Length: 488
Image 1: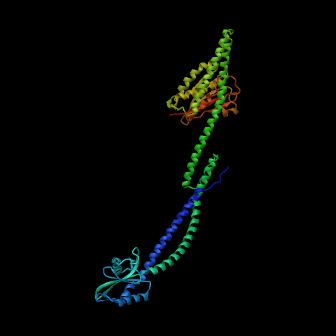
Image 2 (image 1 turned 90 degrees about the horizontal axis):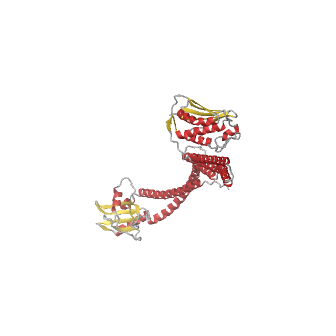
């Protein structure tokens, strides 16, 4: 069942983006409220900067250093007429509150800090300055202040809290309501617009990641050919390249595992067949020797023993070559390369095989180029290749035939080695599988000593030397096996 592709990354980023916008919106609303409130307080202080001064100019509540109660009440009455929401305090030069308006309010502190008052009086730039609120000790509020002097003598200060409790309650209610509506509308429009634009941008950014996830899902479900196509040069391209590289490695490993599995099955099938034959022969002749121990003739006994020996030798060769090929296929054989003269090796091997070839009435000729550069290879492994190729040529060359071994200097800094026979050749239909395990020609019957593994072993050895084993053959005219080795 195919799973639907769900872009979880897109929605995760979108939700986080929305929450981030919401947090930013709330912070914006809070900061707007605070700064607007500060702005209004500063405007209020600037507009009412001379309020205390005006009160002083129209009132004289002191006489001979004493507070005149009727004059004080007249001053408060004047304040009530001007702005009943103001809170006015008469403060002595040390900051102690002498009297206040409205009188029905109960003050929470009897002393105020005069430092802001003195700063306000000395300030010429209308800077926003906050002072103590006698009704609310925990708060600082904008104010107006002016010294009250007579005959150049300081008697007190007029301290006016501009944003009194009543005014503050009314203004805060209206201000908060207005700001709430304004912020809600502004934040709502901003959030919607920004979120939609953000979704579009996020979609564009995560589109490639969505395609990557889709291809990964296809690969997971068994489509081993699924690869990511690149349309951009961003970070997602690097991610796609990494996935494609890993997918190629996994696919290659899977192919190798499948190949190994097929080889294992083929090995079991062929080994069971090829081992069964010599084992059956050995067992049959040994049982015959046991059964006819008293009646068998000397010649028959020799014949039976020779047959058992030949079968045992074939079994030994098969096991050894199977073990050798298995090690090569499992990459357990390392080529110990060193420089050597290939012509000398070819000459030594051909001399060893000449006696065997003469018993079959086959001649071995060598054509060795002079002054060849040394090659860089594993001597013992290349010797094994030459032995397998000459063995193969001897098997398929009839009596009276010829085998020719050549070494030629090539133009690409390599030396070409060829083993050519004039035997039966290889049919065109069989050439693709000539280097496979257990290949045996169908049109030649003199193969009782063949294991069918020689060419496969030779090819694997040349693979270790980054070389190939090429075939040139013509049916009923012979074959030529060619490989090259690098010069130093």
